[in-house]
Structure formats: C-alpha cells, structure tokens
Image 1 (cartoon, rainbow, N blue to C red):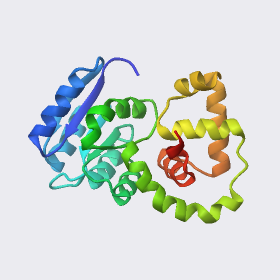
Image 2: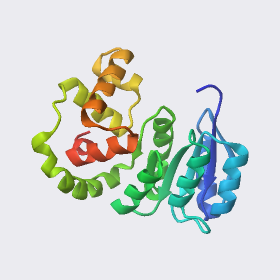
Image 3: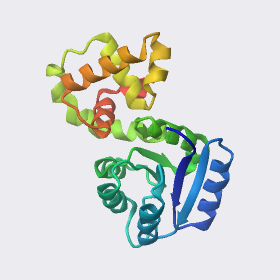
Image 4: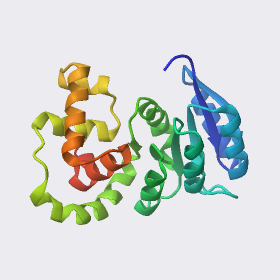
Length: 217
C-alpha cells in the first residue's frame, strides 16, 4: 500500500477518541481522516473520506458497530473494519466476523494491540485480541469436536502457515519465520484453505480457534 494509511475513528466517547487519536499520531504512516460519535455520522464519514481502515465501537448509538460494519462493507468492500469494544463475549466476536470485520480489539488492551491489529488487517490478516481467544475456544472446540476424526490431511507446512496466518502474520513475516519464499507461503496457504473448504479470513480464524491453534502461538 502506497502513501499514508488513512484511518477513521468511530466511538461515542470523546475521551476514547482523543486517546485513539494520540495513540495513532505517534505511528509513522498513519493519518486520522475523521471522527464520528454516532452510527449515521460514521457511515457518512466513511462514504465521504473512503479511509483504508475504520476503527468502530461495537456499541455506537443510532447504528451499532456490527450493523454499521455490514452496511458500510456492502458499499465499500475494500475497507478494513476493526471492532473496538469492551465486550469479551464470543457472541460479539462471532457477530463482528460474520459482518465482515477484519479485527476485534478490546478497549482495555488497545494501547498494546491496536497498532499491531491495524498493520495485520492492512496486509490481509485477521486480528483477534489474545484475551478473547480462550473464550472463542470454548464454543468452537465443542462444535468442531466431531470434525476432528475427518480432519483434512494438511501437510506440516500447510498447517504451520495457516496457524500463523490466522493469528495475523503477513505472508512476508511467515516466510521469514519459516525460512521460505513468499511465493511458497502463498502456495501452502492456498492449498490448505482449499483442503479445509475455507474461503474467508473469518472462516480461517474460527477454524483455527476450534483447533486450538490460536492458543498455541
């Protein structure tokens, strides 16, 4: 991606907006292009500014963050939406991913995790706050238990690449960690996804959670 990363901030608490603005202003290459405190204003902001990334509070007034995500992505499919929330319940995470959000970050850990989450989604990754992962595993493992006996025959490298991709590493980062070429990483990822029958990033994150992959990393 060329130039600066344009970011929209959407939260109904001015103090939170100020904190996010200060946090992102310290990062080279990031530019906050607008702020909104309600869903309708946020939708208008994103239509007008067409940012690269939108940080969206799940509890926005007028239009909540999940509905806002679904609506704006129908118009701007290239936008990367990161949900920022107080909620650690897996139901909110599932709703957010199903709506098309690329990331789910808790407000209490935003100072440590938000920048990494933004960088992960910019290069095609999905980011789930580490504090939420255990909550995801509880339900997902139960749902996937019967699938384990017929789990597709992934190779060791396909499995490792998919694990790293699920946690949010870029193809370049995976290649470096595994001492492979980027093209090889892309091939292993593509083959693994085909074997698993997965097509979206949200599908991969849910599958990884169900297999316990996220807890291993």
